[in-house]
Length: 628
Image (cartoon, rainbow, N blue to C red; front, side, top):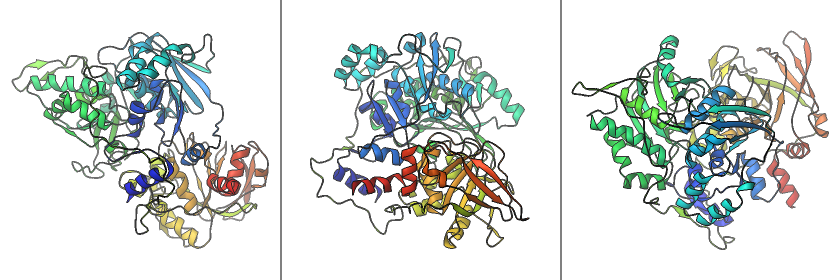
């Protein structure tokens, strides 16, 4: 049903469709669409992958993408620019992934919010084009609007190898437009000497907890993290290039030559059909299988929770290492006790072979079956295939010249597809008598708000996927997950169940949260679900980039402690100032169960256009009204 819908919608509206098996869209864009100097927006936070080809690629919410497709101007607040000056040269065990792992440790998961990260300096030339894409891709983990590299000969070679020689020549002629201006100003500068940069591994539970690989064993022992590596996973949109696979395969060959296989389970996820076909042709896939690996489909796979993991029970404490970009709690395998670490494909492969976090491949020895002690030689791999890429199966559907007579195929019986019904317009009145659905304790990413894994199949069905609303969030009242008080009945229930009960009884509600609310991917669903189930405002200390820019609920920020009364707290929000432009504060009156009340100020950050969208109920509603 889903693929029929996508194929038919693409054909009707002139949109190219990459069929199942094509790969991860970010890799497909780098291979086919991206070029130096283009500005491109996409509906995923890892859209900035294209920065590896000198593009300004920005991840946005679906409503913003609709604006662009409809020819309506798209805008965002002008970002700051963080400069990362690279000196020295990458070598040995250090990889491009280590650059962003180091930057994430410096800036944290919110340090890049409201900024573009621009890499520059003499060290850039030692990084491959796909390596630059890896760095830009994982820039999403520091909250950056996007990341970008200056055009250089590594990009030129990649464009030529992927059949875009004319673009490479044109970019070369205009290189002065595609590099930082002389004497340009940065709002912040970070300097990294690549010659001194050591391999890193970040985690667990957050991608900004950075450790040198040489320290991770002792840090894990000190913190009680499991040392045994149960599974090593390489691939994802961040690290699935030909070079990544080649460097991992070079380590696999060394182990096999000594008679060793992986002690941990090992999975390989090619980023695209082109990568899969090429690593099969050139023998990399065989080496990775022979050392104990399983080559999975060309897809996001375990990185986004598409993993039917069976080697540990849910709740069993264990460690996995991945070359992915995120390691939030339960993201990969739905097990909150899994300690996930993100690192380079090379380090993942080495740790999968050794089977322990205590292994430092730069200094430590492995033992062959015959008792021989040996060290792994630093990984090597060609930047690009000597024999060009093998495109593999043709999985692209080009739209017909005229699709106006075609019908979009949506099966009314499908439990995975549901046509959206427009949200109601703002009445123009204040929000009165709002109940607090949940006050979330601590970190609340989009994985907490709209879990992935088994829920992915419902992404086209808003009502069904809304059954995962905030089921991963911790309720500050009882430190429980998915257990909140129903203020109408006094009983405790699951978050979506209580929300539906309120909606059925015409009770609107708010969510109260902490800092950097909404960090992560799947922001579209994380925003749509509360509104669908009767939510009218999200009240937090601060929002992650994008999440506060949906115009279907009221995103409000308070700069002080948010009071809460668990028994019968009722909030009322004065929205009349939404007639004004700019971030004029709103007032919220909190009525407590003892009869007292207090007033606090809340800031919104809508601009004039966003206020119009909010008043219409959504940007889609506003656009539809303008077309009449």
